[in-house]
Image: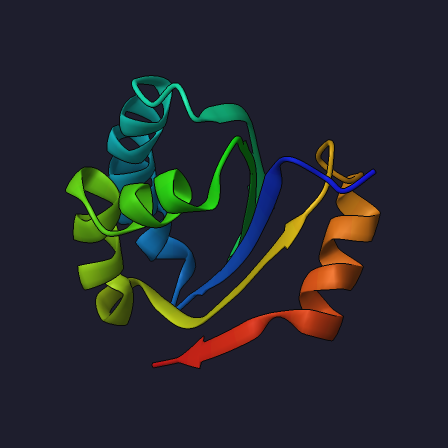
Length: 116
């Protein structure tokens, strides 16, 4: 049986530990946007110092793409150059979010890399 949901994993390497304050401010608004989106079924984040990660589980790909290109998330993407030296992202089909260890491995092996 084919997976009916999508997982997106993202990593962000901050330019400096001091950028954490901007990241936190932007993340607070993005999480608010996520909570108002019924297509996002689950969200997790973790990070320390300059490396931060997110994972989200979506019911459909169009909703995921719309979320990424609107509102607080779009604003966050526009500020990426100020915030990060590198962002990686990987989207794939799965029934549930992977464990963090597997998520980081998948991101390392398959992630699309954006550098600033």
